Amino acid sequence: MKVHDKANPSRYLADENRYDTMKYRRCGKSGILLPLISLGLWHNFGFIDSAEKAGKISRKAFDLGITHFDLANNYGPPFGSAEETFGMILKKDLGVYRNELFISTKAGYDMWDGPYGNFGSRKYLITSLDDSLKRMGLEYVDLFYHHRPDADTPLEETMLALDHIVKSGKALYVGISNYDAERTADATRILAELRTPFIVHQARYSMLDRWVEKSLLDILEKEGKGMIAFSPLAQGMLTDKYLDGIPANSRAGRGMTYLEAKQVMQNLERVRALNNMALERKQKLSQMALSWILKDKRVSSVLVGVSSEEQLIENINCIDRINFSDEELKRIEQILK
Image (cartoon, rainbow, N blue to C red):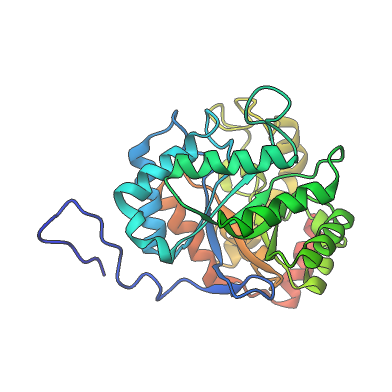
C-alpha cells in the first residue's frame, strides 16, 4: 500500500508493504540477504536516457522489495552518467532509505584516458571508487567489485586494493566479476588471508551461456561465496523479441555491441522450443529463463535491466515459479543440446 505525505504530496514515500512479496536469499555464507531479482543500471540510466523514466523504474523496484541496485563506473553512456543519474534519484527519492539499500559499483574496464584508467592497479581502483562515491553523493557503497581480471597486474596488488577500500570505510564488502574458476580460487585465498569481507562473484549466466557450471559454482559453494548472474536473458535472445526474426529496432537489428544477428539466428530454433515450453508453464520465455537460473540455490540473485516499470514487474513475477519438475529439466537439457 502506498502512503502519501499530505504535507508534501510530491515527496516519494516507499510502499509500506514492499517486503511482503519479494523473496530473499543469503549471499553465500555472509550475513547479507539479497532479493532474488536485483536491478542492474547498465542500460537506461545514462545521460542519453530519460532521467524521469530511470527514477520511476528505481522507485517501483524499491516498492516491490528490490533492495540491491548494481552499477559500475563506466555505465552510461557516457561513462559515469548512470552513477550520476542514480545519485540524483538518491538525493530526490531513495536516499532517506539508505539503510535499506544495498548499492554496488565496480571498476576494471576503460574509464578515462591514459595508463591509469583501466584494468586492476591499486591507483585505478581506489581513484575510481572515490569518483563513483562523488557521483552518487555517498560516503560508502555496500559492495565494490573488481570488474574483470587483469593478467598484467599482480593479483595481490588488486586484492590488497580491495582490502584497503574496505578498511578505509569506502565499501562494506568486496566482490569480483568475470574471473575464471582458477583465478577466483586464488583471489579467495588472498582475501581470506587478509580477512577481507569478500562475499560474491558476479558472472554472466543464462540458458545459452553456462560456463559457470563447469567449476565456478562448485568453487563458490565450497568457499561460501554467493553468485550474482548477469545477462540472464542473453542480451534479449531469451525473450519473445526474436521469435519471428530480427526486428529492425532491436539490439541485434541495430548491430549493437554484445549481440549479433548471426547469434540470434543460430539459436532461434532452441529459443522457439523454449518459448513453447514456457507457455506450457504459463510463463513468458523471459520469466522461465530467470526462473531456471534461480532454481540453483547457489545463485544468490539475478540482475535484470529493464526499460519500463511493466517489464520490471514481469521479471519479478518469475520468483513465484522457480520450481521445475525432473521431466521439465530433462526437456530443457534436450532443447539446449
